[in-house]
Amino acid sequence: MLIIGSHVSYGKNQLLGCVEQAIEYGANTFMFYTGAPQNTIRSQVNENLTIEAYKLMKENNILADKIICHAPYIINLASNIFPEKYEFSMKFLRTEINRCNLLKIKYLIIHPGSAVQHEKNIAINNIINALNKILKPEDEITLLLEVMAGKGTEIGTNLNELNIIYKGILLKDKIGFCLDTCHLNDSGIDIAKIDNYLNEFDALIGLNKIKCLHINDSKNEIGLKKDRHANIGFGTIGFDNLIKVIYHDKLKDIPKILETPYVGEKPIYKKEIEMIKNKKFNPNLMENIINLK
Ligand code: FE
Ligand code: FE
Ligand code: ZN
Figure 1 (spheres, rainbow, N blue to C red):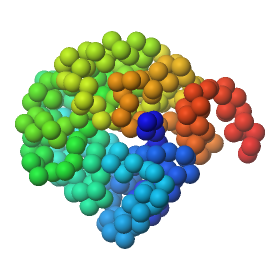
Figure 2: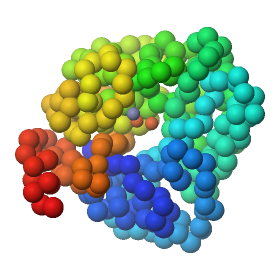
Figure 3: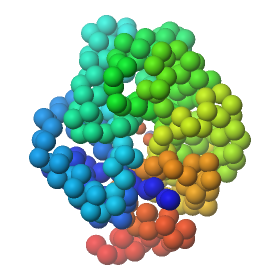
Figure 4: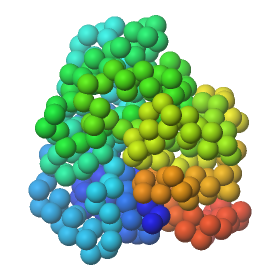
């Protein structure tokens, strides 16, 4: 079954608001941040809204066990140049895991981090140490490390780095991965030849560790390390290559999440999901949306 959704906002009615947006977009899963991705201001989880959300999911065939939460960008486990910032990142990630427990969410995505002034191997060690400190055997969450584009000093932009991190984690059953098609493209992976990458991933880590896919087109040519997402079919990866990934036999049961740009201050996830379901690209989509206004 196609498991498809998009980023939705938690700001309005928490998880219940997320579910309402997912239904509107024709999705059967979704991803949310528990607050603004750039800051750490978080509201208390409202239990009633959570209960209502799960009821609504059941009525609308939203796959509750495929929902994804994404931790804010400002968490950086790779640098301990400022020990108080490193401590803060660990503490905040811990509270985020606790929030996921309250919301009964099984997957939490984090960006591995940025080395800043550190040597790569030191940054990678910082990530491993932080994760080994944070994760507890009784946790019901799986932390998903996202593959990064290679902007700035980002860690986790190739399989070698991801594998070193993974091998250093003590509680391996608490760790999974999220592939992002835009990040892969920008890091130098040709999405048209995704099978080569998947074979390599399988040999090193195991495909069963991929728990989420971010489906984004890219505004940049392959290997430019930019990380600028484009709407589905309107970037350098192209519709057919993205469809190949979305319907790939080996990636069947993995939720696919769109993080594509808004058009005219609004997301166009509903239209993009429609194209994906029909496997048919609409090259006039943007003009149609702009003419509607
Ligand atoms: Fe991300
Ligand atoms: Fe992503
Ligand atoms: Zn990105």
